[in-house]
Image (tube, rainbow, N blue to C red; front, side, top):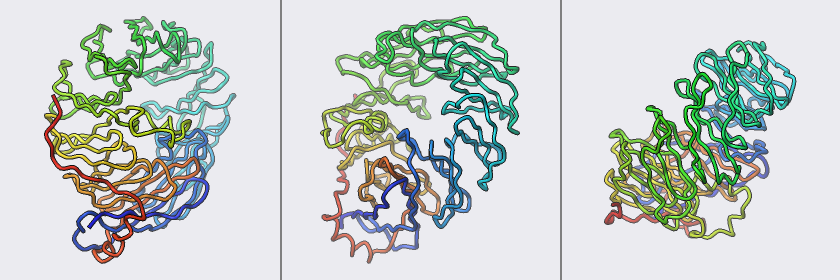
Length: 497
């Protein structure tokens, strides 16, 4: 019996939230189970088309708080009803004790879990769309009039500091120091009292970002020919403001990580990957070797220290010393989560074939060491030695996998979510009609799976109803009319080397 797809009716406009609930069921049906919708709700979409939004925080009673970006913050009851909504920019990282923060124009808001605005602080300029918090819960925000504010959890301004240019980026360091990168490409260190301690000019002509602050050292990126970045610099600035080292990385793609030992992992768009030592020297390098441009994703490290590094079309297994244990080619893959989300805002999906734009496989390490990779129109399971255990072909481009609280492997492929067993068998898949960018937000031990999608108008969240064998049998005949499922290829000889 083949798995079938359940289509969900579309609610026009806004974000659409769906909930599907678990029920008692018979033993699993070969190839798939039934699912049903518990509730649906429509909410407005983030105007910036951020692919990571909305974000949901699941409450203990089964309800949730939903952060909608520019469209504010709301609470949804366990029955799918809107409890309250507060306007203002919000993200899940804007948590505070007993509630959330939100940004609205010149106003910083403190919102309780009941939806009540506890305090509303107006500052001198329009707030930039970001908020950070220090170890003592002090809130730091920046404004369009070149100012940085420190605000207490009670809503009082602790200090205001003005720098010599518009604020480009900032981060919080140890001891209350705030590191601010200005549009003049100068790095400003501001003390816990709001005084500018030092100013350091970075090498590039245009500002980039503060990558990370680790043990007092600030790692920053600046570009000479930004955004083309033909001369992009990675720089390390010491706690006293001196530049410890500067490295011209040429066509920098991104700094993917600063490791605990102070080494820096850097991916370049011409295809090479570097590990810089704490002194800025090249510790090791994975050369391009004619592989083409490189889009580098976030590396994942296994318990044995092996780093699984996603590059364009390839996944590398690399030791801490930079030795490539094996690599697997996913040639012809279309963009995955690392590249495609922002591209879809500007590019018609129908214009792209499966093979015209390579992508970045995104790894997930299972409890037994199995490496799960989504790359293009496929999901693969690899052994720690790089051998292929199984793969699944999907009709759409796959995104980062997730292992749920129920032990299932969840994979999203554009407008479809697949629930797979760890040995690659499809249990069910769900395809909301006319919806795009389906994501799994959360899985619960009781079988509830919360989902959301984005169409430029809406999102949905859901939980899965296992159903019984009779329901699955009645619906299986409709598979052909309701859309393609996933095709599993069993274990085959590996291509790792």
